[in-house]
Length: 370
Ligand code: NAD
Ligand code: GLY
Image 1 (tube, rainbow, N blue to C red):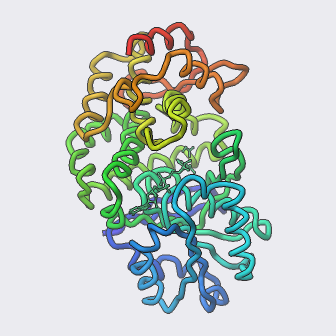
Image 2: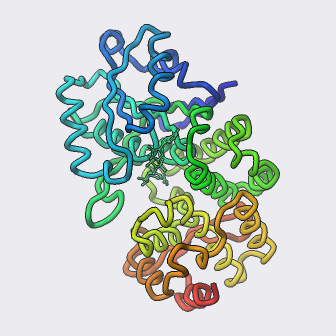
Image 3: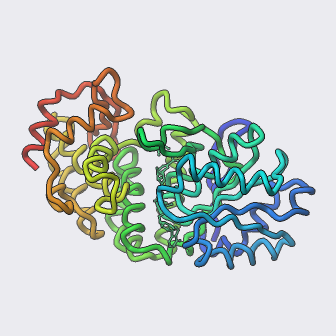
């Protein structure tokens, strides 16, 4: 069964199609977004080497079934592709194919491919339509939805980019079967984040069905992806450019980014793993400040443990990072204003809010006690 979640943004509105085996229906789902002349030409499909090998054949068959053809642009997998060098290479590939303003560029892959392709689409010829076909759980529930596109620079992650919405998102939950378990779990942390930030009932559903999701059950995953996307779509619809509520999506990210910086953005800690640890710390901090109960902290921690994720910063390779280092990283977080840290805290499961009114001493005590 295919589910369709609308993202309501006036003339920039679009749908997220979610379900099993959707790559095989790529042509049918993309066709409404192609002009007659774009249908007659090969469609540029930006992907990475891993996804090309695993999923391009099904995707190309889906195009062929609708009398369409693809022209794959295959990039190296990994975060380093999301760079000025990667953008230069991709722009060259796209321009040499004479992409036109009336055309459509497809991003087939994880968040790296989606963020880079979306940015290139937004700036080439002052804007060419693009479609997101996310193949990681993280990309299906987060990065492909909402129009944030970016590349990294030596000064930091995602510092050069645009808000540029796709025309359609196609999330094939069957494609997640080939994802390494660690990547699946990292994406799952973002799913849990939605329950924790705004929907206690969804969190309770995850408590019952999370292990099935972590084991790759396509139906459970489709429900989790659809619900996560619906929550993100609602937040993006009311705050596309993150002037307010959209920052709620950063639950767990202040701590998470500090941990990622402390571990050098290395394989020691994937982004989603940092978010999972960060959500637990955000609930612990909320409990210390008298905002939520210890029972909420226990349920949060126990759920991450139940699906097989780390629950303590002591478990990081290299051990627990120094408190002072983490505090320094948090002061430099992108959300910080005038050196004042910004946190997403919670008044209970599903009741997150944004605040810059957190005494540093409380954060220090929490980290020292970890
Ligand atoms: P990724 O794109 O690097 O993918 C992770 C790995 O999985 C890669 O090696 C990739 O080749 C492989 N892969 C992809 N699909 C696969 C599949 N189906 N089977 C097997 N392997 C597969 O990483 P990601 O976690 O998807 O995304 C991370 C990026 O997303 C970061 O750059 C982050 O900044 C960005 N991001 C953006 C937003 C946003 O709103 N735009 C939100 C969150 C994260
Ligand atoms: N990933 C957070 C956002 O899209 O705002």
